Amino acid sequence: MARSADGTSSGKARSRATSGRSEEGRPEPIGPPSGSKSADPVRAAEVTRLAPGLYIVATPIGNLRDITLRALDVLARVDAIICEDTRVTSTLAQRYGLGAERIAYHDHNAERVRPKLVARLAAGAALALVSDAGTPLISDPGFKLVRAALAAGIAVTAVPGASAALTALTVAGLPTDRFLFAGFLPAKSGARRRTLRELAAVRASLIFYETAPRLADALADMVAMLGDRPAAVARELTKLHEDIRRDGLSALAEHYRNAGPPKGEIVVIVGPPIAEAAATDADLDRQLASALRTASLKEASAAVAAATGLPRRQVYARALALQGKRHAAEPH
Ligand code: SAM
Image (cartoon, rainbow, N blue to C red):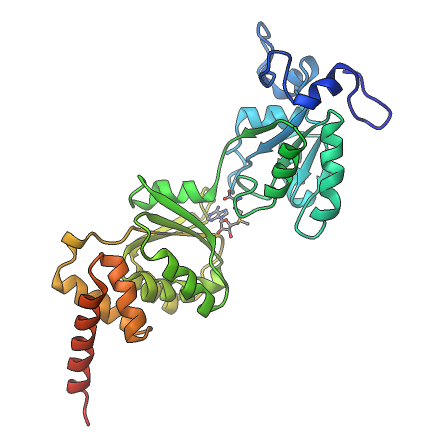
């Protein structure tokens, strides 16, 4: 392929970059050309060129073998790899012999670097975006770059693969037909409870990313705001010490309060609100008692109403009665 002195492609490739598409109006195939016997990404790179554009390439979330053949193919053939942290990506590059230039793109330099990347793409380059782990843009940098590239008429192509959110969901044993990915919750309890309150009525499994030091507090706030729903804590997925603990939210909160912060990376999955029909009086009392341990009467009633689908007035009345019983039982 013809390259200009500044390393950008020229001629036909540059004119393609305007539309970001091949002459047929589709992205060029990125596997070995038809008739080629080579399935080796590096050899394929020698014989076919990659269509200009931005490639969003998922990388492993722990186990380095969780990378697709297509991802290796693209990473071997792009002009440069845009990385969240070039040092982290170098582990992958060393393992798979990827020699492309690596450019750092993260929260601290994004505003400055983004226009340069878009200019390079507009000039006909093929660039891959990777993050430290998993799928770029998912609680990781990249959204603004994709938006800017699209606004400049550049083709954006996904090269999908691992993501901790979906990996955890598939092994949690919780409903998968509807789910909401909520990313990281706020670090402070007040803001975290407000966010959880907004999510309490969502009739879907909830997926959260969480850090080890905050796990126990976050689980306690989930009990208070979402009620005692079935949940799972998925830790170190795809790694040597993978661990998935499935239980009710209050049992999980108690476990991690007693055990202390675990090691590693964590996804928390929370099941949808318990259906009204399934919420017996005993369920209601158990959920209220658990929520009242850490939340006010009003907050606990709202959380349990959202979790069970029962009318808020009914739950509040029951909470009042429970609290009355508890006070009556207390020594004077
Ligand atoms: N883009 C990534 C993805 O697609 O999953 C997520 C990046 S986000 C900055 C990092 C968070 O993802 C971690 O704090 C943790 O909550 C979750 N995570 C990443 N790898 C994980 C793993 N192997 N096991 C459990 N959680 C993981």
